Image (tube, rainbow, N blue to C red):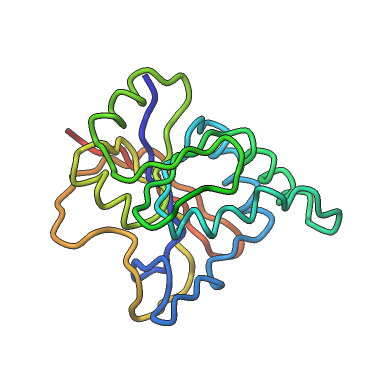
Length: 186
């Protein structure tokens, strides 16, 4: 049985993007990117909302760019080999390989997917993650906390949700990013 993981880069005050929608401040340096790649290697399926899918679809062809740093080319390969499920009522088609489009998020289908999976299932994007967290699907939170306070924007975690957590891992990076990995206590 695989774990369902919500992983996000966020500001110290808990936002994945600022009020203008920018997340440039969360771009990982090579050290953080290499570590994130190792975390992503455990993922067999990515569950994505439309906006996160549109951002992440960059990686579909990025690996062909010879000017891309090696750690980023490595991530492009990791992305390309994973399955993706995109939840959207507005998209009519997907443009990436190994990708399926679903109109509605179905917690029971995700439970069945995780129960039968050999590799982890990752939830991408805070809106979809909020639905997965509220449905009790998420087993782990993996937060890359960036050394910036943005004062508002799109929160990484939903409001009015109580979760009891157990710290499983922490790591501090030279550039100030702190990785925190928590199990959700049931």
